[in-house]
Length: 290
Image (cartoon, rainbow, N blue to C red; front, side):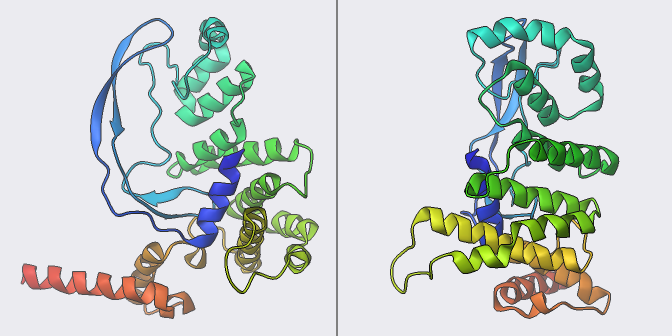
């Protein structure tokens, strides 16, 4: 469940990673079921520079990171399987449900299905959410995955004092928002009572760092507060300009300028420096082409 804290904390902070490009290289693999040999393209390094509200990183590689997939039986090798799991996999791979999913669903959605069927220790809901990232170009499938994620999260017992649960609920609110279910998103936010929870936290220390558990909770609650403003204005976009990292926001500002429009985010110092770099790069390209 660590993933929910990372996903929300990085999105709330607008974190920027070290700047280096993805470095692809071929990996020879053998399918753990059937022994088929195949080649999978992995990367030795990549950069990330923040995330969308749904947790999908911006970066120099494909996200979610591709899962090795056996060409013959369609097994997604999303983890190292135990002996008991390897024994159970052939029947699962041959099932009607899995054969249909090979044709209709993404690798991460199939991984979530297998993890549930194997009763593994992983988090199927985190896999389902990542499957929705894979479906950006397929709105109907993305919506189906988002609804599956919401239903799965709501079926779990509520744990208001657990920051992991709170982080997951933040992604539920965002999924409702992207689906255009604004009233339901507002109802979730009302139940979470973000302002009351923030007021109950101890004041940040004047010097030094606050305890990690408090910092995690504060980060998630601040994320939810910002998300509430996006919900209130009826914005269902995957990349609301005020909830994405400065570099991505600057590109949206360029598009707005071309339409004779603007946004207050474009005037902020953290976005303005990227916006100026984009403008200078554009001037350089224009000069080179003249």
